[in-house]
Image (cartoon, rainbow, N blue to C red; front, side, top):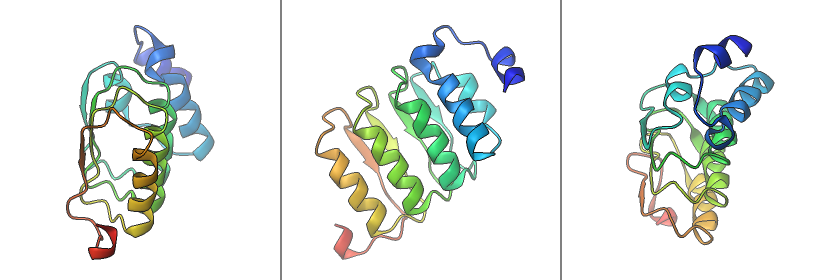
Amino acid sequence: LENLELEFPLEDERKAGKREYLQKCAELKIVPIALFIAKMEVEHINLNHHGMGALGARALAAALMVNDKISSLNLGDNWLGDKGCSAMAEVLSVNQTLTSLSLSSNRIGLPGAQALAIKLLVNSKLAELNMRSNELDARAA
């Protein structure tokens, strides 16, 4: 944890969510994604194909709850599943900066889609949500 904090200094860590992310990674016993740490203050982040799974999504969500920099996030093909999708849905109830989110190809089914739909009712900022190539059928529409 300390090595990553020194290796990737951020301008304003409080607003980026770096500490929250690293703490959640340590708590979940997962390896932090260095690219995410390095880009936390950038508007657009592509984390496509990082294999983070539901636990990685939970760690990312901890950072995104406080991050006011990222407006576009691509999490395509990361095996998030419904649990990871639900973690991202929680972000939408708090984060007012994110305007574009791609959750394509993440094995998300009806439970994940329902979690997103509920949180989208209170989020007026997200303008684009990509849910292509998931496990959604007509009931999810």
